[in-house]
Image (tube, rainbow, N blue to C red; front, side, top):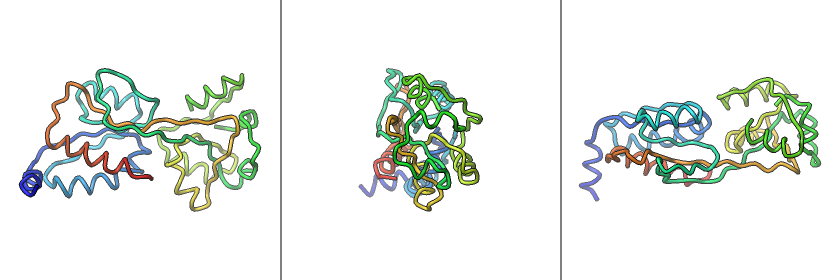
Length: 212
């Protein structure tokens, strides 16, 4: 075991990881120092983008690993090493009257400024809503909600958790809308898994298995 650790500490090179902004914020502040402790001479290249862009980069071998949040991915060109289901919730400022109600339905939300899964839930009930703003940055979405009590947003629960704990935001308990997506760690089937890449996979899984 000590010989293995010694060889890890002597490895160099670069590991390229793609992820979403929300997971970059939620997980990589733990992943990066843990990996650097084990592989001090390996450079980490992090790319934050949307699901389509990082998946395309993985296919083109511009990334070694992606850690994403999406519908479950079943694609034979990828190897999935981890998945976990995550709640997707509708959040608003605590000053919004909807935050104090326990009988909210989707129909109550259609007049509010507001994503794909949410649209599908609305469509099932013959409802529609026009979002006035779509963002890649969950951090900016949270800032806008904190500053504008009338705004709503659809976000992973882990993204809003800290703001909810601080009392800035509230989850709207929509009785007829239950949404979820899947955190997933993937690499391309044709990828040669070097010790550096395997080490990153190990660290990501170690952190990903812990609750937010």
